[in-house]
Image (cartoon, rainbow, N blue to C red):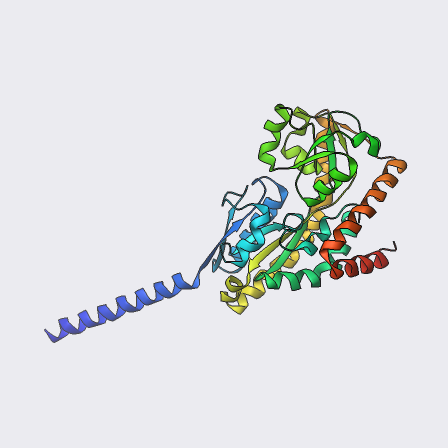
Length: 334
């Protein structure tokens, strides 16, 4: 009888230990749902997938980042700073130009005609980085890596060779910069999600759009528009931001591993933007779209527009914005 009782007690302790170990293991693993703005096939979303896969592998599954592409979680771009701040999201892709309503200075890297290539745009971001970090801290979040879009051009039904040719266009834009550009250039600009563009074009509400070569391919722009003019108005920067409370709950070694992977991912994504631009431009041509070269005269006109628009923006963005611009212009030799 004593032997049976002893065996039973041992079994209870063994099961208890196993349950405790299983419970501890379950508690140690963390799942983050990640908001992504773009479709799963977009190169930003594909980059996020590589990042999530590498994090899961390097942490032995201790951190599992589950992706939700195409804004499937229901959050809209302008809401993202607040959603992260409040902990509704642990991690999200945040386009800088979409959140200027809450933090105007973050839209610095979405201002028109400051830079015209990814090298200059990264220099601008590096100059802005300390200020961005300070602002994001107020919103209870931090940036672990960034990526950039190829510079945006305009898709139209007719050829565009000057600022005068822009007047009267009914154009889809995606941020405040697009709205300001439209107002100054005599364009009827409307900010709307990509999912609404095609029906709006068919209904005659739009006859043009402002976006990158990559997005033009994603949208199959050649089905409804004829010309693409690479005016290079802006190369929007996306931040991958993490809620600070969620971040601090991770063990220190996991945070270190995530940041090591993030540093490599940032370099990869900035390099990839140029490659994707070249590939997308080739696709647009292959599909029959005419790509119109920008003349020196047209470029000078747009640069003048850019100076005016940035001066207006700085008034609401504040002294930090002007200081960053001055530092960038000096470093870029402008």
